Image (tube, rainbow, N blue to C red; front, side, top):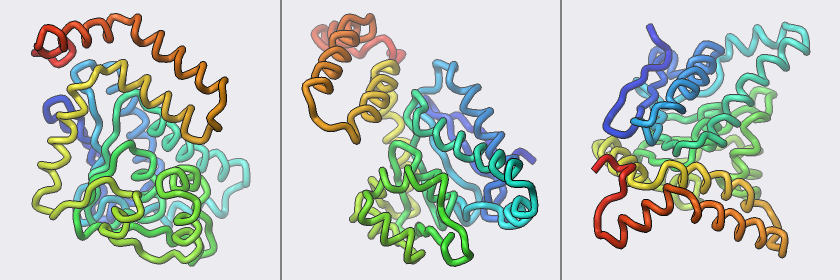
Length: 260
C-alpha cells in the first residue's frame, strides 16, 4: 500500500496521506514518499498546484509515537538525522515553487499541524481541529515552530504551543491560521475551485511571488528592500511570461500558459 497516493485533478496534484488506520501518523516512509513526490511533480508542467490531504478520519494526527520511542533510544546523532528529515520536508514545502493547499478535515495535530503551516493556503472543514500537544508528553514542537509562528503570529503561537489546547476550525479562521472554513460536504469543491484559480496565474510569477514573500515577510522596510523589490519587478517585467500576460490582457484573451 502506498503511504502517499497521488491523484491528478485538472491542473492540481492531490497528495493523499494514506495511513488511515493510524490517522496518517507521520513516519519516515511518509516523509520520504512526500519528498519523492515533490521532486517528481516539480518538473511536470501539467501540474500547477499541489493539494495535501489525508485519507480516513484525520488529516494527520502527528508523529508516530512508536517511532519516536525508538528514536529516543537511538544515539543523538541518529536521532538528529531523523529529525532533520522532517525539517527538510517542511522547508521543501515552504519554498516549493508551486502553490500548496492544505485540505484539512478532522485532526491536524503536532507534526500534522506543521504540515498545514508549511502550506501556502489552508482550507478546513468546520469539524477540523488543530493541536500542538507536545509539551504534555515532555516534547516540544521544534521543527514545526518556525512555520507555526509565521502562520499564526508569535503571540497566538505562545498560547497554543504552551497550553497544548485544541483549536477549532472556526477559531483557527478567526486568528488567521486558516484561510477558509467550509462545511465538510463543500470541502473538495472549494479546494478544487481555489486550485483552478491559482492555475490561471503565470507559473513563473507564482514561484517568484513565493520567493518574494519569504524575503519581505520579516524584513524591515528600508531603501535596500525597496531597491530589491524594484529589481524583482524589472526582471520579471522583462521576461517572456510577463510579456505574454500583458499582451493577452490587452488582446482580451487568456494567456498561453492556461492552455486556452
